[in-house]
Image (cartoon, rainbow, N blue to C red):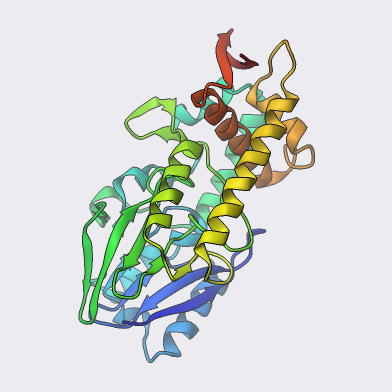
Length: 319
């Protein structure tokens, strides 16, 4: 069973996204790229290079529901007529605009984000959401942790690997310990732990960084020989990546803890200190706030910080 990468352009700073073709019965795409003319043409060319068209695709499996990974899902499905789309049920909220729900607003304002800044971010993400076609819940089949995706030449096991998003999934081929892991593991950059409502309790934040560290350790236990990420080259030394990620988290934790004054600080204030060039700039603003919130929540779970609410805004203090 061969996993065939197809590089698809995106309009985002991260660059091309990797789509993976498994040219076995059923013909399967893992991720599809954003809904742009350039991406659709690149996907058509990539499939044509293996003697296929959109109409030949029988199954679409999404690692997560960010626009650069899922945007063309409906277009490919409609061209194929009978293709099934699989996505973890904790991801469906991302398919209607990342900041469009009231719980997103509450969580960001609670983090100290000013109303005006939130409105600007929401407006931006409304534009970004146009890079994916809306999918109704009935359009999707659920991915379940531990289930096997069957192919004529073998199987791939579904692994729920939350962190980057609550419903992020990876796929593992036991026969040769090959992993397809979306944005869970990337060779050149560390994944962003996106701020999201908890799927089990939308009034709470999903503990993205804590869950990500568990997911990373789980993948390490599989001892993958090759890990195909959502961007960049494949990873051939998972242990090196694991240790690099752990060091990066430890360094960011120390940096953030050093910035908290005796009077305490909000997540938005910390984001402005750690990422001064990002907080006022397009999509990077939300990513910077997500990173700060994730690390502050992680430090609080580890007993390094205490958090209290002042006039509905969370303030973190050193213990």
